[in-house]
Image 1 (cartoon, helix red, strand yellow):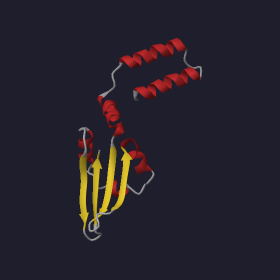
Image 2 (spheres, helix red, strand yellow):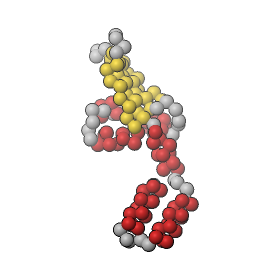
Image 3 (spheres, helix red, strand yellow):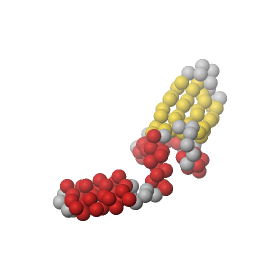
Length: 125
């Protein structure tokens, strides 16, 4: 559980009367002294990153679709069965995991669909 969720849980227990204030203070101080796990730190570092899906027409260069999904909403988009599922399926999971650990912009997919006259690019920004 992340530190923020633990803090919220402690404060909720105080509000419901399940925990005394001095005990809550002690638990919150202990929580602040404990470092975040590397997984939680990585998740926080990625909180402002986005998956950028860009579809353009080959002949005209006109943008057909330009969508930016914050990474923290990516799981929600998959669960709701959003229109992005076919695009997300094109991203190799190992490539995505590798790029998540490296800061910066990464091109994950670049496909030219000549029969449709479109180019599909997916970036991690």
